[in-house]
Image 1 (cartoon, rainbow over the protein chains, first blue to last red):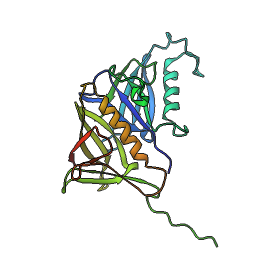
Image 2 (image 1 turned 120 degrees about the vertical axis):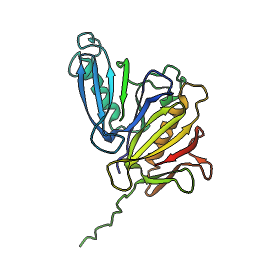
Image 3 (image 1 turned 180 degrees about the vertical axis):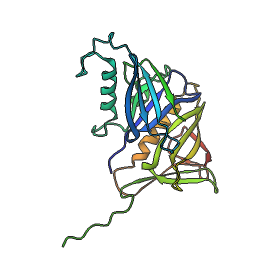
Image 4 (image 1 turned 90 degrees about the horizontal axis):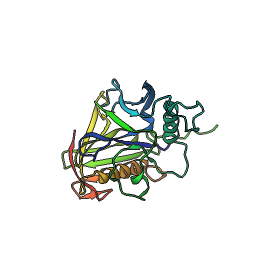
Amino acid sequence: MREENYLYFAVAGDNDADKDCAMFPASTFRGAVTMSSTTTEFFFAPQDGTGTTANGVLMTHAGVASNNTDGSSAYGSAAHYTVMEKFAQLASGNRKNTNNFTVIKDLNDNLPTNEGAISATGLSEVTALTITID
Amino acid sequence: MAIQRSVPSHGGETFVTLIKDNDEKFCGPASNFLGLKCDGAGSMKLRFEDIDGTAAATVVDITVTDTGGNGTEMKRVCQAIANAMVGYGIQGKYVKIADDLTDEFIHPDILSVDAVA
């Protein structure tokens, strides 16, 4: 059986309100869509099991024109592509010798330091998150 | 002629269990895990595909430690659950995530199972 990878997201808060954090199996990822020049939404199969309205994580990042420093994207300077590319790398189940708990983005500013995945904050390009789970 | 090896429906699958009491228990394949979310301070909801085959989810509510009020323990529990779902690389794993009846939990920050519905 292929090993599952679990993707963790948390908004800027203290995990003390509904949907402050969420974790999805990478296999439930359905796709990502650019929503504006500064936002990209990542969709997952709904946690309510109905298979109808997808759950989403809306990520805010730099605008298309302003991100010209990151050369990791094959598509140039668009932050959309950089975020999508890095998400794909993290979500991949083919990474060896890594934990299967992957922090895509955690904006909680009270995390302990130097504790591995617990201290990880994820994609540096992402500045805000909105988690939608019906 | 080669003999076809019989393959169980969930061969090599990890099964996870959460138990509230004698009347509310869940056991299912980890591949049926739909995800989890924070439901408030120290409160989490885990969802699995419904065992009766309908388009709904089995929802398990658990309580976790929130000592510092910053949600770190919730993240630790998420990591522990993710690790448990994978099992240990051998077939036929049965992992008990939380059992309120016997006070057995895979992580010390899991305090209780509050509902299985």
